Amino acid sequence: MFRISSIVMLGLSCVLHVACDSVPWEAGRHDLSVVDGRIHRRDSGFTLRAIHEPDVCSRGAALSEMVPAMVRVAKVGGNTIAFDLTGFNDDGTELAEESVATVSAYADRAKDQRMAVLVRVVGEDGSEEYRRNAVATAAEALSGEARAAYWIDGPDAGALTAQFKQIAPHLVVAAPENGDITVTDNADEAGDSGLFLLRDALPNDPRSHVNFVLWGGEETYAMLDEAYMTDAEKLDWTPDNTLLTEEEREEGFVSLFNGQDLDNWWPFNYGEDSFLVNDDGYIEWYQGGAGAIMTAKRYDNFILRLEYNVTERDGNSGVFVRAPRAARQSRIGFEFQILGDSYLEEPDDQSTGSVYDVQEALTVAARPEGEWNEVELMLDGPRYRALLNGVVVQDTDFDEIEEMQYRLRRGFIGLQDHGDHILFRNVRIKEL
Image: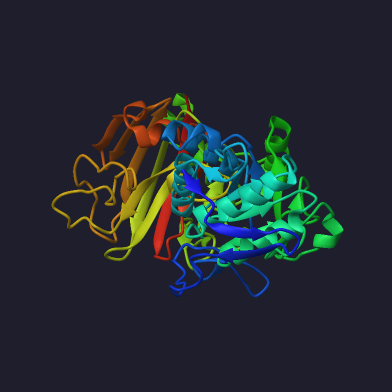
């Protein structure tokens, strides 16, 4: 148990923190901070697009609980899981160590998934004394967990936030008063400012810098998915199957790329471009920024075929599979890794053909840089089989790999922009 180690002086709302600031604070690489009018992490702006699932903390941090909760948020375009801090004793003076560990586990997972965690320290329930004690206890216990953001609500939230910030001044706190981010129910008040957290409503422009938190529920997930739907997803796109062989047409394959334009694709990072169709009719990377181009449709079980050409030694790209609408595609769906690494003697979990950062390829099968490679990926439920240039490089059951059991089983397909030159062609799919 974590116990209060500070003295709360009633009436003055003053907190004397026994640890004081004897050790200078040094922010970690993944810590959240407020800089230049918005939340930042890793020197980049970050907007909290949160869905609030109150009881997440009480269920602990097993992968079977943590991964589905976060995956569900990213699937529809969110990037932050919000939950209530649980585990206090009756008077709020103690907090279970398991609760603190759960917050840290979620924060650690979130930074790898390019997501965030928003912890509601107290809401509107409880006596004035309980809430004051709980805020002090939480601030003490979590003062070093700056990878998460914190949220304080209720009629006395301003005073409680001042108390929390005196004990843990380096943590980012959202509250109606005295926080780093101001909680509001008014979208017009929030405008386009990254210094607001809009509660239970979307900003006037969902892609603005306004942070928001929505209450969980099927309607909320559906609303968010629709809010971030791209123009490509709304178009009635007709594939040009004349590019397929007669045998593939008879087997039921459909072309995902017509050799002329990218109307069936959308940039993962809104408003950015990284790929074009060159004079040879290939998809060509030409600049960084988009992160990937994604199919207009989600897929679950299918056979995907394509060809790629890494033009430079050690060039980096990949094919995202069952990917989400937001956050890190390779950690929420998965990635068939592509590198210019044909010279390798032994594969690893980040070389060509690997399930990126999870499972190495069975063998090295890539051709040298500058040559075309043929890929075939087959997914059927948990079954995954990958061929590279006719050689089996993956043949596995994701239900037998704990890390993969709870990831998305239906999502977008993407061609990665990793900042290196690459060509793609002959992208086609057969749904199973």
